[in-house]
Amino acid sequence: MGTPNTITSRDNPLLKRLRLLAYDSTAYRKQGQVWLEGDHLCRALLARGHRPVTAVFSESFWPIAPHDLRDAADHVVTVSAALMAGISGLESPAGVGFVWDLPGAVAMQAGTPTVVLDRLQDAGNVGSILRSAAAFGFGQVVALKGTAALWAPKVVRAGMGSHFGLRLIEGLSADELAALELPLLVTSSHQGDWLHQARLPWPCAWVLGHEGQGVGEALMARAGAFVRIAQPGGEESLNVAAAAAICLHASASSRGA
Image 1 (cartoon, one colour):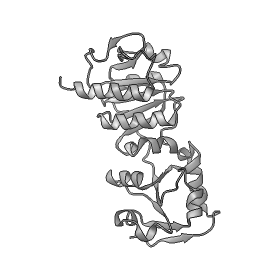
Image 2 (cartoon, rainbow, N blue to C red):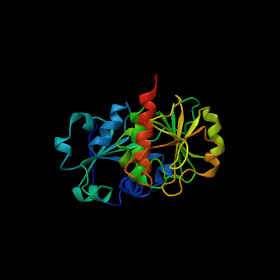
Image 3 (cartoon, rainbow, N blue to C red):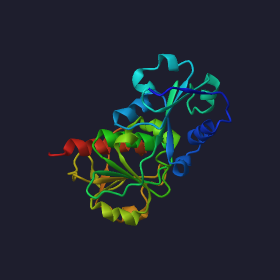
Image 4 (cartoon, rainbow, N blue to C red):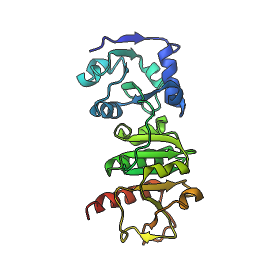
């Protein structure tokens, strides 16, 4: 177990860096680290066999913290409740947070069931889709240019730990998706087979588009198939994260059928 060091100044270099990671959606790209706040995210990291470089505890939580959290990092610090609140992105600051070194850049892997995000903007939607991808066996998520940053704090919180089990690639163009060597399935509200009747290939890559504009023309032209979700209630369209969950579940359920 690391022996905790107590930090008392908000101007401490570590706390300055944590505030940046907590509030700047793209700071992780320069820092190479993410700030994971709260018991759930911290345990999700440990469950995947990863180890944080630093563990930060509030002074009140440290004495009662479980041993797996206390023993997780060699570098351990404690801070006052006020300082913890200053680096927290939560409405109610948690008692523990981890600093984790992001893995190095990974290349897109051909043949791996994939979710492609085309210019999605809402952090909650992106995080929710990552959760669905992990739950339904899609091990790779590719974010095209213009999509919300995958390791942004709000996306990480919405992902609820799914990030640690996925292969994540950012900043690609539509042209680069040919390297997936997979059929691209594009959701549409007005064309294609009904999802509940379609024969879904496996493995495949589901393409999910911008919340307002949908999938871009460049990807529409590359689509292997278009798929519609039946909506007997008469709504015009579904939230993209809800549509993703339905489509990915349908793919997972049809495997081997």
